[in-house]
Length: 131
Image (tube, rainbow, N blue to C red; front, side, top):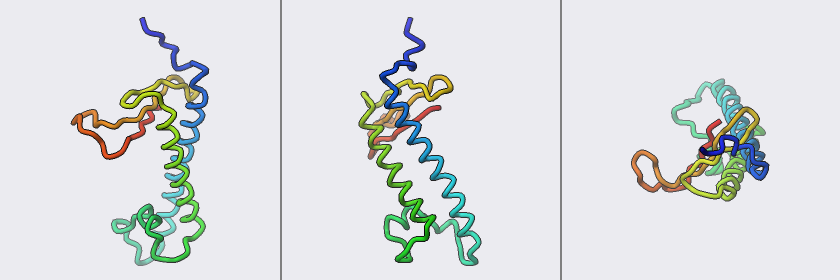
C-alpha cells in the first residue's frame, strides 16, 4: 500500500513555498487585469476584443509611457514567468504530478511536455498546479 501522507514530507517545503508565491502572483495578475479592464472600459473608444495588454506590454505599447497599473502588470508578468521557470527547474520529473501540502490537504504540481490527450509534444512546458 502506498504512503498516503507522502505530501507531508518536510523536504518538499521549498517547493511548497515557491508554489504559494507563484499562486499569489497569479492571483495578483488576475485582480489587476480586472482593474485595468475596468479603468480602460471607461474610455469611449475602448474595444475589449482588440485589446491585448500582454502583447501591448511586450511591444512597448502605443504610448511611450505606461501608466502605473500597466507598469505593475508588466512587473507581475515578469515575476510570474520567472517563478514558472524556477518551479519547472525545482520539479524532479516531467510529465508527472508531485503531491505537496499547501495547507489544506494534498495538492499537486507538475510540468508537462506532452499533451495528455493527443500525446503530441507541446511547444513549451506547461506548469499545472491542482489545489
